[in-house]
Amino acid sequence: MSASNKARMKRLFRHGRCLDVAVDHGIANEPDFLQGLENIDAVMQNLIAAQPDAIQLNYGQADLLQCAEGAKPALVLRTDVGNAYNAVRHREMWAVLHNPDEPVLAALQLDAAAVVVNLYLIPDEPAIFRMCIENIGRLRHACDRYGMPLMIEPLVMAPAGQGAAYGSLGDAEQIVPLVRLARELGADIIKADPTDNPADFHRVVEAARCPTLVRGGGKGEIGAVLHKSALLMAQGASGMVYGRNVYQHASPARVVAALMAIIHQGASGEDALALYQQADA
Image (cartoon, rainbow, N blue to C red; front, side, top):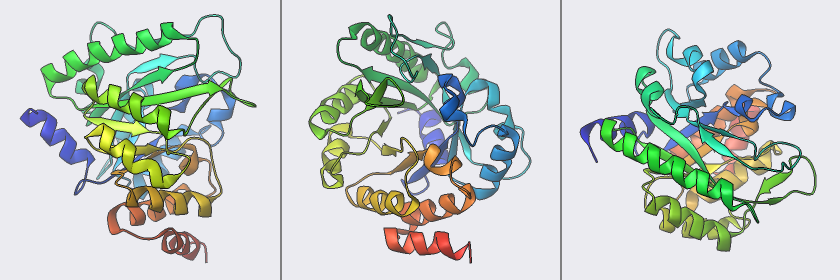
């Protein structure tokens, strides 16, 4: 690991822990994902004031973070786009890098602390899996050259019963091998789905052999979200990458405060919920 890589990792992880708030959902081209993100300027102002460790963005919105005055969270820059989250299944599934020729250039120009890319495993869709492998290969080469940490998001997906055509699974038997593959391909950070049974998540952490952040998925009831987050931290997670479970709640800043207490102070789900509710009193 180069000095540049280490320096960026330290910006992202405080004492080995990180809350990354993802607001890169506009790239999915799905209306449901935009609920709560309509006024992106206001969203970003509120999130910056809440001071999570990082905010995850696409190139076109990253200026809202990096041009803000004063102390601000680190930038995690999304590098790929695809159609796996669309509400209908397509004849052709695809995932491509924003800039395949210079995949890390924008991250360097924007002073990002890390880049993130998907690794989709979808039944009977080998083409998108191969595209993801190729994307990761290009990114890994560029990240090594410039000392940029690479976050890989391995997603085991299957046809969903409602909403998006495909949904991610929490099956540990499928998540663990895909996380191991992501590490074999050179992940510096893993962003993984929670296992259906939180007690199984230590297996994901062991397969990753690098900092492992839990992916949030769709919005849940705040008490349940905080309780499960604490259980996952107890299994060895290094933090969370939550989007809709932050920005679609009535007070994203209070959610950030509660999650930061779990991640950095070891608060229980109950204590974090009390902190969330106290701010509302």
